[in-house]
Image (tube, rainbow, N blue to C red; front, side, top):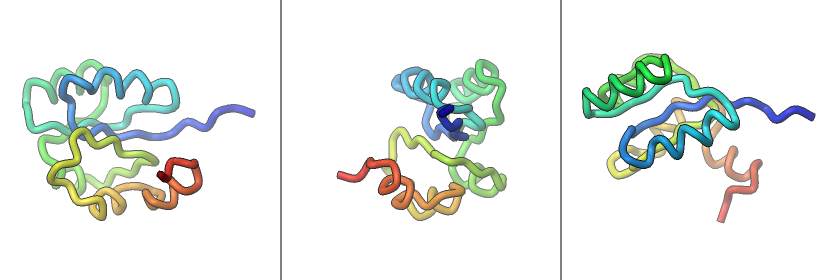
Length: 101
């Protein structure tokens, strides 16, 4: 059976982002990036040929969908906003995939 490919959005393109993107590309496709640093945002948009957003609110209003949203960091982003962005409810996804603690 083939591994399903997931659509990912990466929020936060800091130092750990390349590690997350390696795993994203192993299991799916990166569909968008979001970062408040214009240089980093531009770099990742160019490198991965995806649209970029300078704020989470702009990303939310773009009407994108994703199976998984990777948040790095989560500090000021409410999980309910992210849940609306995803095709699947985050907690339901975690339960289904054995990711609950």
